[in-house]
Image 1 (cartoon, helix red, strand yellow):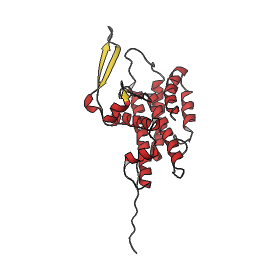
Image 2: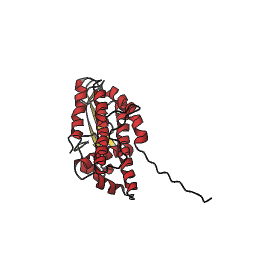
Image 3: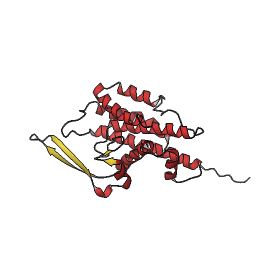
Image 4: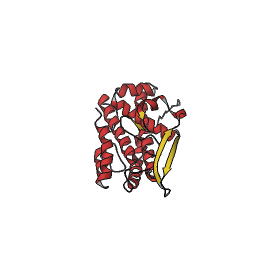
Length: 232
């Protein structure tokens, strides 16, 4: 009997990342809902930004996994070719690139220098952060202004990444899913973003989540979400 060869190709795709989103997102939200939205020198709580950063990084990884699978099905191995073919130039592509920049800042250990000013009681009064220029990539310079991305206003300072950034990151994944489905009807991509064991449409899941917190905090997230939803 002749020998047979079996090849299995795998990557970080929706199969494993969806299951952890709810725990990460909901833990970040609990911290977010109990802190002021703004104020002199206020800081994002460690719990909120740590879990939110994880969602942002996983979201970028999930999109890369989808695009690499498409490239493989077309007999290509160029990630850049894939993004150009399946995500038309314009705001959809910029949204994905902005998410990738946030992922790079988190995953590649980009360094910020923060100057904190204290009041007479030793409490934070105001702060100013600046990214060390040695760590600025061409794409970063293209899509970032004043520590936020230009289109979606995602935070690129790791100390400022928050729950709203995490929600927007998932919204970009959802937007990309829909775009890829339109361009290739035979692609095995779900029409919804599965979240945990209970499968819900993305918008329903987020709305249910935001209904559990006060309206002021919820509305601040919805403002950012609308930037993603307005992309045509």
